[in-house]
Image (cartoon, rainbow, N blue to C red; front, top):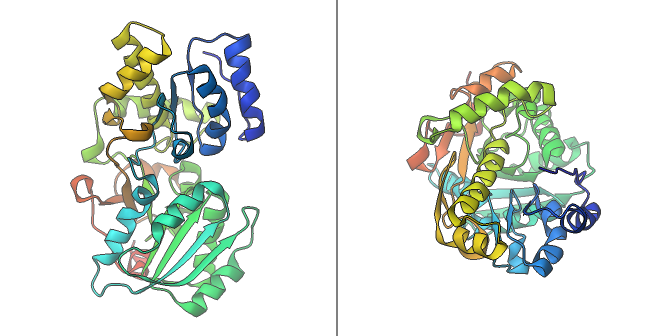
Length: 344
């Protein structure tokens, strides 16, 4: 296996894949983490007609329409809606139903999809729709403006560092909408969980997998135990619940396609992947149109009963309740946010 760090720099990606294919002459390539690491590789992958399984690239193939592309992010055929559907279904089912909504998002390409999916949901009145530069580090002024508006729903779409900054500012300013969260990248990460600790209480946000009873698929416990035994020395996310299972399952897809075809031929591998259901540590996976999962499986989680900043408390189920969909739920939503925030 040849691993080359793209440094999350999209300008490095085309040359990395050219080197892998032309200099290293690899038999197989796989896609990186995000849209920024996958989209720049696509022109060369398509030119060479390679089989390509990516990791978390949300909407890359919406513009390329490449038949031999597949992606592990479980957002299904309508990715922008899938990330936000559960958050708004939960909000709409409360009594009394919240009426007003503020949207606050980082001005970044990945987050345009979730923001688009947030609009026109359940007839909520949008009272603020704001963007901030990705380099923003001081969020208190933005949150003070929202406190003056006092929305019932605060929908946040943000990256790691700004997610932490936003939640710290919400606590410091004392903003208390009825429901907060939605599409934040950061709360899923073990280091961010430990950094924020009780500031996460009451936040509702998406996750892909958590160690709750209905998601303990065959092999997942062994994989996470092995991962956590190595993560400290590697300087990686101490929990590994967000990316590691998807990455492991990504390679299970490739493994089963190779075994199923008895081949390394890209077209045969792609055809096999289009036609078959795969057994993975994330359960059965089937790919549909555009290379995404044929059915979405996004969780909405409410963080509850967090005490202090010890990351070990997140290894159980008491601090992270899956509250949507009902078929996978491990707990119930505490509403409004003020009640969940204060309950320990």
